[in-house]
Length: 298
Figure 1 (cartoon, rainbow, N blue to C red):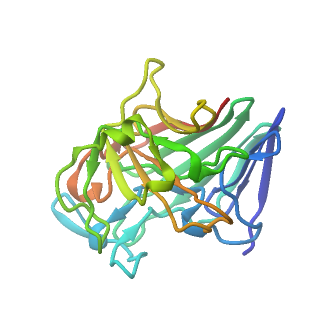
Figure 2: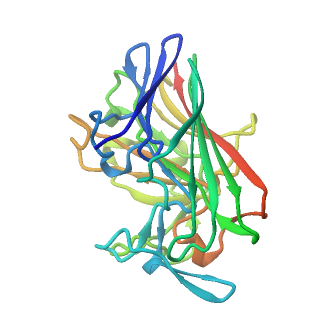
């Protein structure tokens, strides 16, 4: 696969992003991995590091209504018959502003089947002593308001710690049931299992689940964590607009020995273009932005 690799550094923190989908391929702090990685030139496995715009997760059957007119998206998850993870994760993005510790990529998406809008989306990756900050932007290039959602697909690690030995804590308050075959919502959200709020051993979990009602802490940020008994580990933080999170635990060995987990901040739930839940809107000519990141806990 032909793609450019862009490295950014600050002190002991290093990240590598690619122009294929503007994805995060490497995040290291002092030589230790804080996200799962994959070989250069390979397509990201299982959506690793992907940017999910203008919708995260799935649109059931690839069909959604716009002003009561059905819109038919390309079916990009044929096994389940859905449109999955937006329109940009396999696009070739353009590199814009770049410094030693930050890089911005962008892409313009013209009208597509089932998406009668033109928009520009950007992502800025910036590294610092505490990890990575990612800022997404969406600019509406149409004459009509555009509904949208934003998500991302990181697989955080915790340096040299075994992910399977860590406890997962979510800032979510609800669980959205998904149909096992289509992986789209099958009922209303219900209260989350309290163990996932207080900390559940990742080794005991098998998840491909959507969680909502993510609550910010005193500092105004939503924080999902993977930690050991001493509190060491990694966190995925996000601004409050990321009200949802999908958590996926692939089969052991998917990224080498041991367990791995995707903790995916989303502004809206699966199939939001149909339910309307937490769908955002950007006015003609207007722009939107929000940030999330991966931080080291020591």
